[in-house]
Amino acid sequence: MEIDLSYNFRTDSKGKDPDLYSRTLKLYHQYLWSKELPAGGCLHLDKGLNNLSSCGPFHFSSDSIIPTYRYWQSCQHIIQQVAPEAVENFDYKSRTIGGMIIFPRERIDNQQTINMSKGINRLIRDRFDLTLECIKRYYEGKDSPLFACLKRYASFFQLFGDFNGYTDFFFLQDLVDDKGNVQFFLPFDDFRSDGLPQNVNDYLIFMKNSIAFINQRAERIGIWAMMKQTGNNAL
Image (cartoon, rainbow, N blue to C red):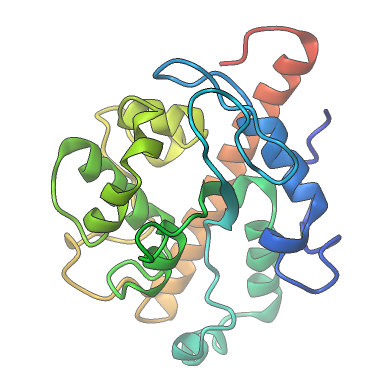
């Protein structure tokens, strides 16, 4: 399957949420994540992103992991000071495959899913760099703003063995340094303050680093897909 790294999933979602309505996005997810797992076994997803393999009855949903805050009311005073074409480009990039991932969609004990929790927690504000730090701490058995939520999905995280397995599986290596530390889009204060960009300078830095990550991750995805097509072992 050919992966168009620049394809914006709003194209076939007809103005609706691509995570729910883009057929192309679901096909890409099905293709990319149906593969061997670091802890053994494999995922084999159908078009509805349900796992059909013996590793467990997992049901997934798509998630755009790079928020642009373009439509967040609390950020309008910042967005209005940024060049519209820059915000538009950021929004476009965020809806390409480099900015997409999957998480379990089932609510456990009627509690929030990972998608829900990271979106409403004021210390996270839907930022994936901060979410990834929480995932890292989960694997290390350390507390974080999302620890209780992530713990509910222990069977999902067990699929990847450890934090390195998780980052490698989802092509997140460019968000982690050689020592295994998360590379944040904005200076990190150990979850002491609101996760939102606080001013225009913050937003521009966040935008620059987010786009760089999307591009780097897309390149990794493209290389893997090309190697899979040619029958080589993907890295």
